[in-house]
Structures are given as structure tokens and as C-alpha cells.
Length: 149
Image 1 (cartoon, one colour):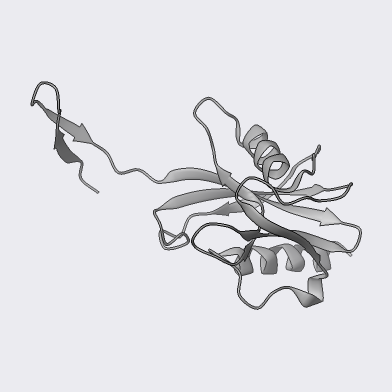
Image 2 (cartoon, rainbow, N blue to C red):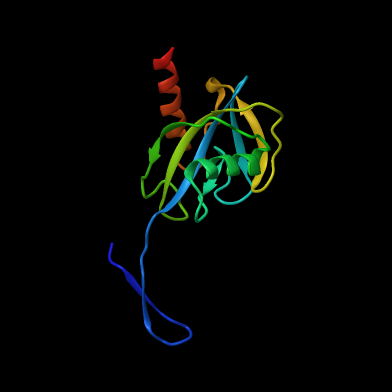
């Protein structure tokens, strides 16, 4: 995609602006009774994996731990890479690329930050409608689990 130009508000010079995808992370938190999902406070509304945008200077792993703690109150340690998802239409707000991790969770989840609620869903009882491409991500995760057993 070609660069776009803006005008500098201070000097009037043309500034090249690149439209690059934004990096995000999502975490599949394995709890004793299933997978922990968050109900989003902000659009798009619905159930989703805990996750969010990677901050400048932050590793993907640190972003995954931070977002998980901020949204659910659950601290996760060992992260296992599930994969990366890059469909330009995966997020209706903008083009994002997500790196998805799997982690074991312990403790009592509490909704915080931009999560309206948290709930553990057994794999056979996941919500019908999930935000973004989280249905595909969870299907890939469940397929991986079946192969490893």
C-alpha cells in the first residue's frame, strides 16, 4: 500500500504517513474447567480472548502477560505460542496482526480494564458469537489439543 501524506500543522511541510498493521496479542488461558474469556466493554461488543495492543518497547510475551493481568486479574507464566493471525479483516476497527499464546491460569478471575465480565467456558460450551477471529483461533487451539491427546 503506498504511503499517504499529511500536512504538518506547525510548518506546513508534507509528511509521509505509512499505514502499517498494528501488532496485538491474545491469550488462551486454560483454567481447570475450561477457557477464560472476557466480555468486552467497548466495541466490538461480545466475548473474546483476553488481549490487546503491544506497547512500543514491549515484547509480545510481556504484552500478553500485561493484557491478561489487566483484563482478568490472572497472572500467567509460561506462554506457549499457538500462532499468528493476520487477515486484514480480523478486526473491524483497523488492520491488526495478532500473536496468540496459550497459558495456564490459576486463581479467581476478576473483570477489569476494558473487560465488562469474565467467565470460564468449557470447550464444548463456547459462546456462539465471538469477537474478531477468535472462533477460528479457538477452533485451531481445540484441534491442537485433540492431536496432542
